[in-house]
Length: 268
Image 1 (cartoon, helix red, strand yellow):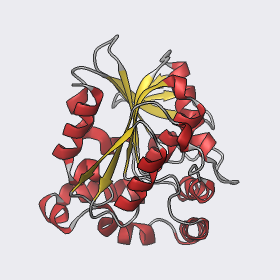
Image 2 (cartoon, one colour):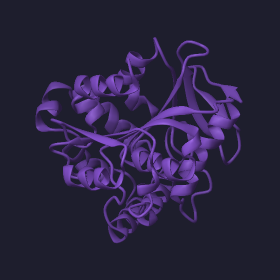
Image 3 (cartoon, rainbow, N blue to C red):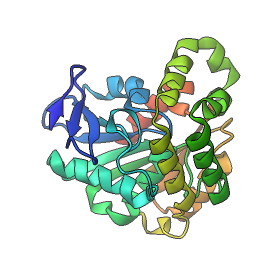
Image 4 (cartoon, rainbow, N blue to C red):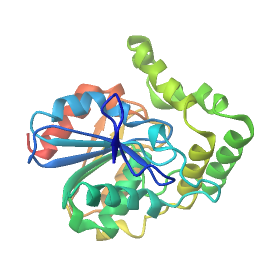
């Protein structure tokens, strides 16, 4: 492992690098925060600050994003790759079990973990996500778009997907910071994650998830809807659901409500 000047650490330095930060009291329970497509671990700053007095907070850049780099992106990724990276990071840090909170792509990564590695999770938070996000055709078209034209086209429509108009007016600096991270994402890594989402479908699998789970929906989310959250709730026996007045990135758009729901669920 190596550490950068901003305290981001890197597991491995080759093609399978994972950039992460680990903060909070040594020996405290660990909570893992997993970012959305086109974002980085920086999107979790408000929740990390709220959690770090009582939890050991592990944030990481999903492969293809931020300082984790694009890995070997030429053939695309699979959902198992994204979930496997979490397990590899936990193993390297000697974390036997953790709470997991993921948003959008991070949320379906959490569902994969809940199905395939339930013994590694205490509790699961799935925010603004679905057991099947979008369509395979749509994700393949987006992958082709960014590989051919770069990130600007995707970034142009992102604010309306990610945030309500009110938040865009209240917090323009936050919106611009998220857009800068999106534009800075390697097209190859972004496209490879799109291909993972094109294949990802755990609708028939999540009935096996019996650990406590919280499903967070955004009332104004045009990407993963309240109906998507209800569909997961019907299939997950230990899940309960909260709806926030937010669009797709509810941890920022409805920051206080999201953080309060997270802390309540984790037992603060």
